[in-house]
Length: 95
Image 1 (cartoon, helix red, strand yellow):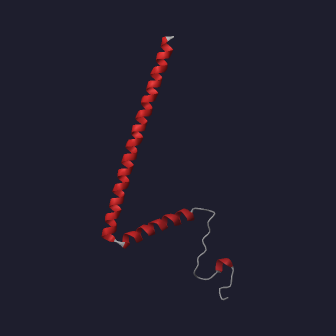
Image 2: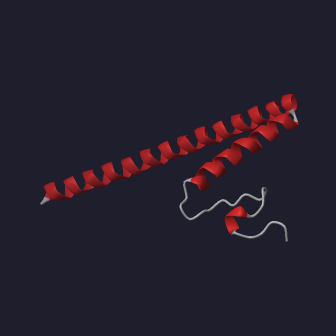
Image 3: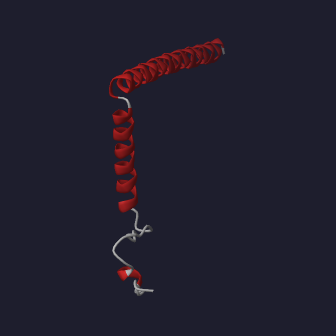
């Protein structure tokens, strides 16, 4: 009867060891992620100092492209241009 109890204790110890190692790896991953985000913020700050408003304009354009790409692949979204009359709507533009 001692063998099953010893095996059970051994499995419990291994399980606890695994949980501790997993938590440590998750902590290390969080630290690395935070360091990366801090470095990205520093890089963006330096770019803003150098390029000023041009950098912000570039980021807006990149974001707009990403949004347009996402919307263009969505079958539930229809684009109706605002300029050039109301040809798509069948409404007389002279009214």
